[in-house]
Image 1: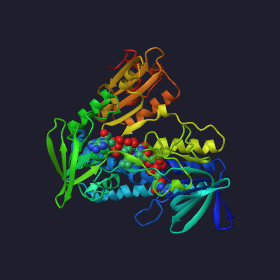
Image 2: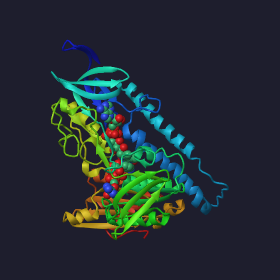
Image 3: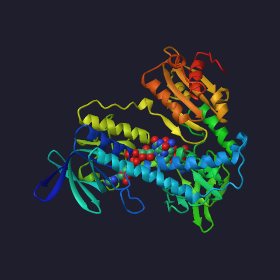
Image 4: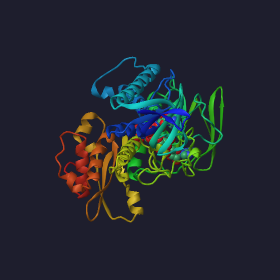
Length: 485
Ligand code: FAD
Ligand code: NAI
């Protein structure tokens, strides 16, 4: 970092690269840029409960990490409540201390915040806690103002914007985080609600709905679309829905949400069901999980003429270049799936492009995971997409019911499904619903990245007994030669 008198007015700290936003897109871009020899600043405004820095963005503070901590705690409770007895383990007076569960989640979050601060130190990334906004374009770069506990002026030759996204509210129903909750409030519920309503049965709806159902809440999810998990392979979505129905997670499809009223008794949601009948759902709390919107609040894009699209996302090309020279944008604030690993990949690629290297993000091999039980994971195209694209394909499935490890685990729900090109046998999509799908999908991602065929996977030796044998068997099923089913 250099300190220079900038245009005679104030002292600006100068950097090769300034990253605005310290979520997975931003902090990873900052570290990679520092590894490549640049002087790097990362500006992030997230505050912890004490007002201190909490880098890691949505993912670390109110997203991936805390939701997975609660999913784990609640799954332990579910297992102890309903499944330990199958193993001969009996428990008396089982109880759930929600405040302890939430405190544990907060500790996990803090470990991740601290880990990022440590990584910044290790990689010599200068961290600024505060809001970063464009002041103006200057010769050879941009001036960024940081407003936090102290005001700072920074000048960067290259700027990487990674300002993430915010929860979308229902029109006319703002989040109060007490009765009407975004993902933030949903992760801070202090006691198990008797009745919990959710609007939107997407990723957050299913994950958060699962947490509180496992802990004893009566959970109803209202979904606007007539199909369940429309982006997921239909066969997999159907299998998942069967499992959720069995668990008692109520999902009403094809509803039209009307007026929402809050009062002392909780929340009342008027809606029309799929048959067109007027209904009212009463609940203690409501989680609204109807998607997220790109966040550029506070960036002051007008100061430099940064182009946004009609959704408010920063406009970028295939390589994350904005309309301004030397300004890049990555992660949730640009097009593409709102996933932490997608943001990270873009962050690395941008740092490498700044260094004149060939950064690489393959949008066809970005995996998706929904961390419910059973887990749902996929990569590549679904059967319905292949049909729509007119691609001739072969399909192979293998149920966990026929997998020895799944039987030993006592978790035999679901299947692995392979879709391969009918002529070349190249793998076009892999879809899993079942135990540890989040881990199993990695093999499929590697295979697709290397443009493997289903026969390649079928010929690879997989450890026995392991869930991954179901992957090999599904690959064999493409050629109609499973060995264990
Ligand atoms: P963010 O993580 O949103 O980070 C942006 C950062 O920029 C924030 O810290 C913000 O405070 C800061 N910022 C914004 N504007 C400014 C400014 N002007 N100045 C300074 N700082 C600023 N994805 C997965 O892949 N797996 C999951 O399991 C998963 N679970 C999720 C669970 C929930 C409940 C939610 C809500 C999301 C989940 N996601 C998950 C999505 C994931 O969190 C996002 O895709 C990811 O965080 C996007 O990273 P990002 O770096 O683009 O933005
Ligand atoms: P989502 O896009 O996954 O699901 C939103 C759902 O709400 C959709 O099914 C949609 O049809 C429905 N919907 C929209 N408007 C509605 C309305 N007015 N009435 C009823 N239903 C309505 O969005 P969600 O769950 O809010 O999550 C946001 C994003 O966060 C995800 O898309 C994902 O990118 C990310 N995320 C990722 C996770 C993971 O990777 N495991 C976990 C949680 C979030």
